[in-house]
Length: 80
Image (spheres, rainbow, N blue to C red):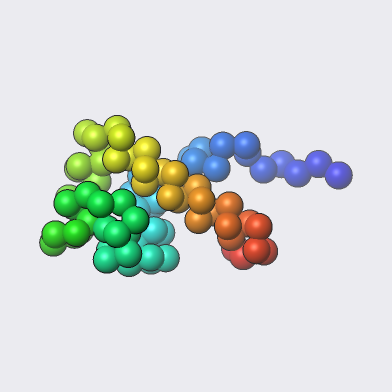
């Protein structure tokens, strides 16, 4: 039985969608503790975070990794 799921869980997912889902899941405060960057800890917003993450590859990688961990955890536990 084969599944038609893409191997890359980031495929087709925008950075904005990733951020919104993470904020919904964790909230800004917890995200700021997990990934200690100013745009999450001081006056956080989607817009300012997107600007920072688009020009800061190391921070974007951390956000993408957190998102992938969240998605894998949901899959593992039968969540949506």
